[in-house]
Length: 139
Image (cartoon, rainbow, N blue to C red; front, side):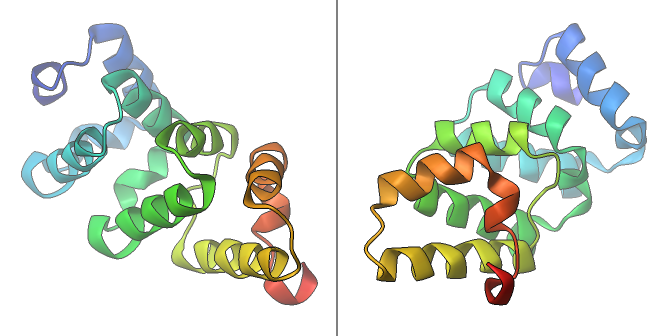
């Protein structure tokens, strides 16, 4: 199977399929392969990939170039590392959409403009991600 060729073991495949059985109907060349390659090229391990996809199965439903890639890149810019992005995505069971990412970016900019150190902001995002996903007006 494609997932085994990419290095996933049977328990990992079972974990992903149990989170999103519909995955078995998705096209490999246009959906599965580009997204998996993207995560692996970023330096995520196969284990990280499985954890992200298990926590965020809806990532398969979003377009790579217009939603997934910008969301991951924005989160990495804010959080400073792939490890922090993995932690956030595993903890928060909603794949951040473009609008949610925009809220996070605006809220982080708001705090930075008021002199809050980025390390403090990163820590708070990882502790309470939902607070940063609110509209800027109610933040």
